[in-house]
Image (cartoon, rainbow, N blue to C red):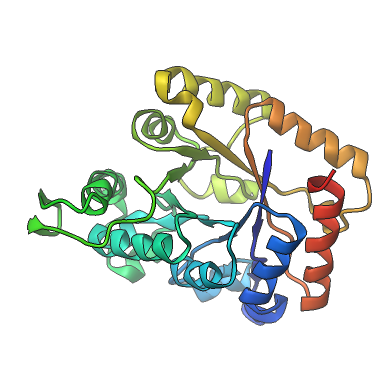
Length: 299
């Protein structure tokens, strides 16, 4: 199992996201400590009420990962996750290619269809079209990255004889899809390279159309279902799970329990754990990066 450090979320409307420390410094520290990847989440148009009730701030994940690419050499770089319907897929493809080139082939496009109606409205995107727009992006991205001329008639654009160069360093850039629906799992099995179950507080699933991720046994069954459906592609798939136990804030306490929990996810088929420690002052985040790696990664 490999471990992805997610830049800490800052919850609320008064905290400053970057109090956790400069992005470049944390990325270099994570790589030096032995982490395998670095991630950012995305919310480009957060509502003030949502922030006041505990919602979190973000940087733009593609811009931030472009910065991380220039100061690291080994970390995989994950957008966790980019909401595909928010963007014209040609612009998204170009941005993803740029991060992949800057990182010499270390970018993973973590992608989702989105769930925040308010954010869709603020960005001028029809919430009810999100699945159609998501599938459209999945079709356009590999055409754009191929470097060959292509035509595509999209819902809101018409691309004729488009040729985009340079190509990404990877062929293709891996796409990991986030979400818990059967449709999400089918997309992974048919055309993508990874699955990321969506986890969060119970009230998030109660107020959106997104189903809850289920128990560990149900998650294992979903992983096995995806592998069966992917057939010959199954060995090339990754499965990434967020580790959300709040007590991991102190990585040297309850070590046996955490190791047992992590082993359970690995036995269920997960190949990556994404660790998102709550935000704290810079010194505490740097200490966490080092202590977690020493306790759970370099063993």
